[in-house]
Amino acid sequence: MKITLAPMEGVMDHHMRQLLTSIGGIDLCVTEFIRVVDLRLPAKVYRRLSPELNNGSKTPSGTPVRVQLLGQNPHCLALNADKALHVGSNGIDLNFGCPAKAVNKSKGGAILLKSPEKLYEIVKEVRRAVPEFQTLSAKIRLGYEDKSLAIENAQAISEAGADELAVHARTKKEGYKPPVHWHWIAKIKDAINIPVIANGDIFNLEDAKRCMEISGCEHLMIGRGALATPNLAQVLKGNEAPYSWPQILDLMVEYLHIQTHGDKEKYLPSRIKQWLMFMRLQQPQADMFLQQVRKIKTTQEMFAAINSARLKC
Image 1: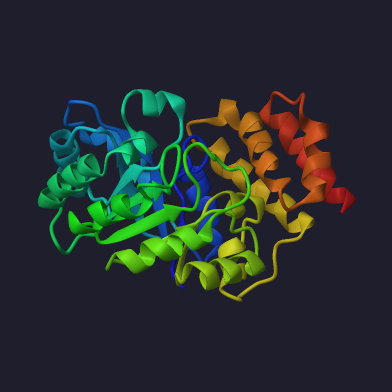
Image 2: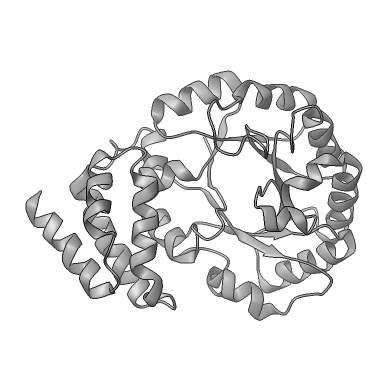
């Protein structure tokens, strides 16, 4: 089983990647998207979003990191794929799944799922810029408003030269609402000849087993589940039991230390609250703790609140 950490805009930044990969079990990280419009971006843009590029495109614990690009101009995407590789990215990933309204308005992300021809054109052009020894992957949803083009979209990406395809088993319109449609991933897997990575609603070992059985995939991508249960990758590989609430509190202190020495310290209380919102999906204590820290605005106060909670465990 290969487990990829999903690219979650505004959530899965390099600090969170550092923390989660230090636990182990994650085989690859994909960055938050870099938006490409009409310019070949300078190296500093890539290094700012992915400081791992200064470490051989790996997290401090050694997990490979792949830069993700988002846009709708094939030529510009190809130029930036070439740039990202020269800066040191571990392959290139293309975002055809982002559901954000602002992104879709600018004809990027999931809205491209309305046009298999455009997907083919983009992947084909980027493939020319990405050598065969470098992986070119893509991520999609099952469609924009419906699933009528799901198979055709996947085939376009495969035939244009992509090496891997990650599929979130919902449409853009469905967002993150249940149910998740893993059986559609199976249809896609049967229709193309490149590896397919299943994504969507994998929160525990039982979810993973059901997803693999229904989708037919042996490789998984986890996002919200990894935030809800930080050692989820190790759980899915049978190496550990899910972290307890005291273990999660210890991890939050570690995250505080990582962030305090980073460039986003002033946002730290908000990031902790954001993380707790995801933890609520699997940890009842996280919801209670979130209520306690809602009004906290400083890092020092957040440190104190977490340490107080640790003492009560």
